[in-house]
Length: 269
Ligand SMILES: [Mg+2]
Image (cartoon, rainbow, N blue to C red; front, side, top):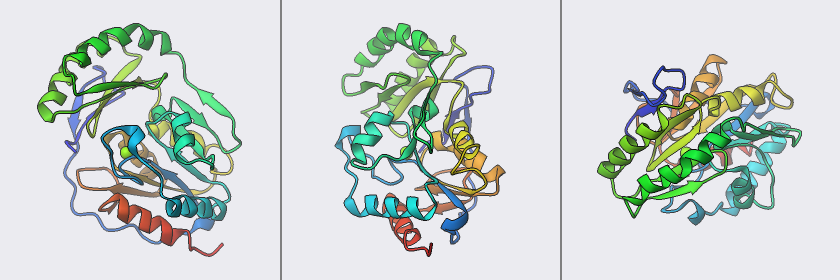
């Protein structure tokens, strides 16, 4: 990870900052399901990153852990991903989890109600052909249109990423409704009004999440807004993998994260 992120609140919507390299972080402390709300990023956190988002599978053992934890936390478990909800449902089938998709642009709350942010959709639709033309200049990279956000999957290393970033920044920065974010091998164009932190805050306002201590596992720059929300509430923020972060704890790999969740699933009711 390169430690570069866009600040949604900054005057230039694609301004980059570097996160300070933190001292080594301890593994997370023991968490009690009885008082916790569990929030999980998916790609790079529970599952290793794949060449294409459709190339990943959820192992049955992981799914069983999540189902068990959801029961222990009385439903207060949500997936918080950049993927669309439909994609999450396909991956975790036959289970349907509370979830935030597309960096908070769509959210299925604990009661199964859908919340969608659509104020930026017409603008995104207008920019889509130009974004497509930018990406076509680097033929190994490709665009994933998620409906409420758009991901450019970068293939070809940091040079390609920098080149695409510069081109996309030119397109996106005049529009305050949108932000451009740089993740691992991906550039995301998403609405400025939403991010994973705001999605976690929204869950925590509602049952069954309300009144519980938040725990968030994430691996990428797009998870930093959620780490901040969790830290403000004295929750447990866990960075999966290397790199600078605002999280307070670290697990080295998705394998370690899945093992940690398997232990949590054996917590006493
Ligand atoms: Mg991730």
